[in-house]
Length: 292
Image 1 (cartoon, rainbow, N blue to C red):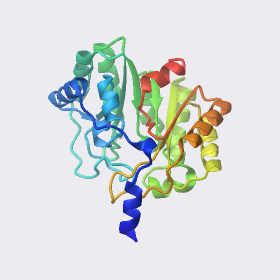
Image 2: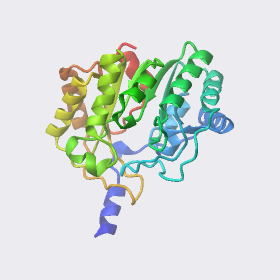
Image 3: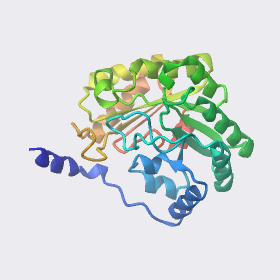
């Protein structure tokens, strides 16, 4: 039975097929990332849009290492084998971005619950170094929840990113199944503090296909909006391996289109909704459409 189900899950509907990555820009970016000893969530999380984004000269840099202290059951980023943070990483990120001359960058990180500040200090230093090296660059930070610690969240916010992003990932009823070491309330608190205390443009995202109902998705969208979130992404969960959660539903593009309309009616400044949408997918365009 398990083998049959795995075969069914691997048979993707046509709207989820993407070309293999390649091309001159892809090769150039990959070389620069390796040269500076950096990580990208594009590679670590097996993003299906890697080829499209890298060929257009955009990428999402991942700081604080390439192994996470949490073990979310949807995520392909490795867990365990945690190494100390590299003190030179903020300068290396800034040096890379100065070379590739982007107009917009997304920076994210693994969760570092082993650190006294969850990595907030290195987060702030990275933002400041990038600002010094690339003053015209707009910075989106896709941050962890820092276990809801207001001081750690504030440390990142005070560094002044243009967009503060944190993904709630799924509806309340599935939080313990999808990301058992996280908290729906921590996520809402992260967004609430960022938007209402620091006035930042905030953003969050949901993965669909875990078995959530449409009404649950709409309720979560409203919770995010009430917490101050103004940019929302909705995408299809894709199972990275047999060790990860199975896909319950492949959500049809028409449903994503309907949810986009509902999100707009709730009041979000921008909703990016589609099967292949990820939080960082076309992030510069998402921010522009939201007025950044």
